Length: 220
Image (cartoon, rainbow, N blue to C red; front, side, top):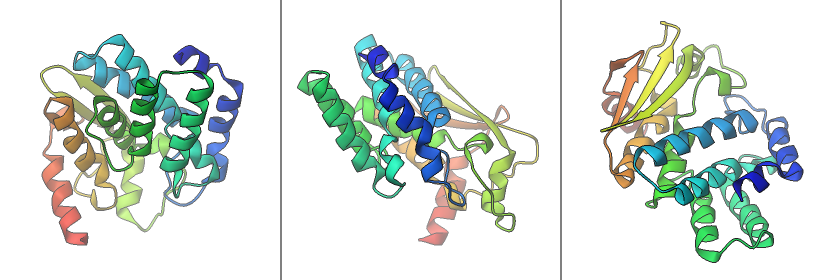
């Protein structure tokens, strides 16, 4: 069913047009580039923890459709994406258990989920925060301006889940105040995936979780 969904021209058109709707300062792209990266991250996570092929397929479907509701704006997009997916998968005669797993993962992808598919989707979605995903930058806001120095995100899974942030050498990882969910949510979701989450910056292990928590507490 994944291939059928990937080849659906209506869905492709919606996803390709999402970014035209939500072009606002500091709002990350929710279009095809983001969706494909999240889909790849989800596969890496689920395959890395030993999930079966069926679960991996459900995870990839949830990743592909998770932001489709953003065609009507970012606010409330998770619920709209879940509603669209529920209706679309019903039309495709997907069995109820599989459909529920996908729809629940999409509905909860902003806040997190305890299911394997949901946790993998939330984790994957939150780590996709790098320069190529950002539409604009506020030049006088160092927290956001700092993102332009994040060149790529490398994800690997063995004994732990490792997120390596590849930078241009200027990136300052002390500025996570405004995007700490990139760190906090993946760590929370890693517990449901059964592995420790480790962050690296240019290959060096950094305790970004403690930094992000400190920043988060400051703004609470």
